[in-house]
Amino acid sequence: MSTRDRLRIAVQKSGRLSEPSLDLLARCGLKFRQSRDKLFCFGETLPVDLLLVRDDDVPGMIADGVCDLGIVGRNVLAEQVGEGKDAVRELRALGFGPCRLALAVPLDFDYSGPGQLAGLRIATTYPNLLGEWLRGAGVEARVVTLSGSVEIAPRLGTADLICDLVSSGATLAANQLKEVAIVLESEAVLAGAAQRLTDERGELVDMLLRRIEGVIQVRVSKLVMLQAPRTAIDAIARLLPRGQRPTVVPVEGSDDDVALQAVCTDAITWQHLEDMKRAGARQMLVLPVEQMLA
Ligand code: PRT
Ligand code: ZN
Image 1 (cartoon, helix red, strand yellow):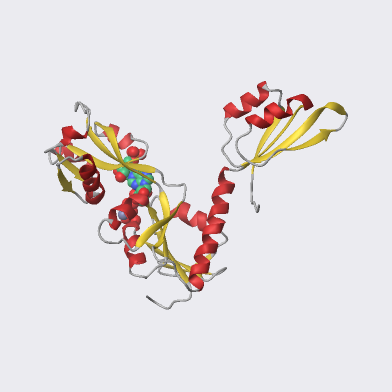
Image 2 (spheres, helix red, strand yellow; image 1 turned 90 degrees about the horizontal axis):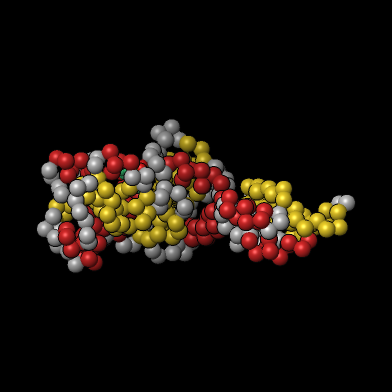
């Protein structure tokens, strides 16, 4: 183990996770000065530096102690843990980069269950996760490991079906494939060494986790303000999504009406608003929350 006193976080250099990862760290109050080669960013606000790398390298860099933390898809982390990187674990799901590792078959394939896959060839870039799923389902199939362009394998005749990442499903549709089973639900996660750091870096990790918690809370939290007849307060309060108990204040010039405000930590939908309107609420406002300290 190295004796660095500054914490190092590995983040994807360019790709789907780059921008949301840097945005999350910025919201946690971390500011970086980018170096000329753009691979190393020096942390100016805290002793926390960034390494910009390929997502596939993140688990290995943590396992080797080159970095202490990393932001990576659960799919990449879980696949590599299967390759012996078991010193690395998921510390927290981050709520962005959602996708699923799924099995997809040609449109004319009449899928009825895993048993039907016995003896078939499945193309994937995730042989460990697929192998584990097949073992769990008690099916013996042939795993064809590719390094990319998995979705064209059935048309090329190199596989009967595929196991690949899906988000909107547009890529599958464009290749005349349909999704039939989910192998892993994924999103970006904060990964770190399974063994907790005992020096100052351990405290930095704890602080970062607390800030991430706050940032994620704020992302969904909303301040709801509305007016309603005093008699409707209870009914409306019951319809509010989970959060703080509402504050009720008088409305100038009216004995019957009150104003109500509450911070909701669960998402608010149009349905919530319509239900509250039916219960007597008027002039409803839903405002974003900028910062929160309970
Ligand atoms: O260069 P580097 O190795 O760092 O990047 P990369 O090309 O390996 O990764 P990148 O940027 O494509 O993805 C990084 C991470 O984003 C993945 O590991 C996932 O955790 C997450 N993610 C979320 C996705 C998707 N959604 C996704 N849709 N990764 C890939 N895809 C691909 C998928 O493989 C398929 O080809 O997009 C296509 C399907 O998309 P839909 O919307 O058509 O279903
Ligand atoms: Zn990659």
